[in-house]
Length: 350
Image (spheres, rainbow, N blue to C red):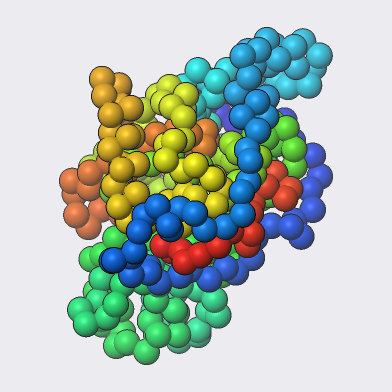
C-alpha cells in the first residue's frame, strides 16, 4: 500500500493474511483494592515464578538489529521506507507514519469511530461489557462504571461527565465496528508484524476523547507479556491533535531503560498487580531515568499513527486548553500466546 508522508509516497507493503480468533474480546476491569495495611513485600510474592530469560529479546532489541534490518532490505523482504521506520524504532524507540489512515474509507472510519465514542453516553441501548474508567462520582467508590449503570443516570448528567472529565474505555473494539476496523488497518498490521516477527494479536484497544495527562510509564509494565518485550503500542489520531489538547509525549531513546528492577517476577509483578507504595517507587525510578532527556510532544494529524517500543518512557502532555478534544485509539499487540493476563494472580489495580 502507498501512504503519503513528508511530501512523497511511502511504501508500506500489504500484511500477511491473518486470522483474528485469538484477538482479545470483552474483558472486565477491576475496582482498585484496598492496599492500606498490607505489606508491599508480601504482595509482590504472589503467583508462580516466571523465570524470564534475559537473553531472549526481540530481534529489534539485539545488538545486530541494524544489520538485520539492512539484510531484510537487501533480500527484498521489506521496502526502503519500512527499513527506515525500523531503524527509527531501534534508535528512538518509536516512529510515526503520517497519513497511515488517509484513504477516503479510512477517514470515514475514523469519523464513525469518533462519533461512536461520543454516542455511547447518550444511547438508550446498553452495550454489554462496556465499562468507563476514571470517572470521579461524588459518593461512589472509584472503579469502572458499567454501561448499564451509566445509562441509569440522567442524560444531562451523563453529557456533563462526558464533556468535563478525563475518562477512557478499555477493550473498546467489540462495541464499535469502526474501532474494530481501525485495529485491522493494513499499515498497522504490517508494521506490527515486522516489529514482532510474528502475526500480531490484539490484546487491548483503548478509546479516549480527551488528553489523558497520564504520568510517566512504560507500556510493558501495564501488561503481562511473556517472553518480555513482545509488545507494540499503537496510537491512532482520530482527529488533528492540538498542541494544547494534551498530546502523547515521549522521551526519544528511553526504550533502553530497563523495567524497574523492583518488579522481580514480571509478568506477575507489574503496575496492575503491585502495591500502591511500589507504584510510587517505580515512578521515582522513571523520573530519574529521563533526567536531561528531551520531552517531545507528538503533535500529529488525523490518520497519523505512532508506533512505540514497550519500554519507551512516555506520558500525556498537559491539557492546556480545557474542552479541546483529542479523540484517539490506543492499541496494543503481542505475539500469539504472549499475553498472560489470565495466568497471573490478583488482586488487580484495574
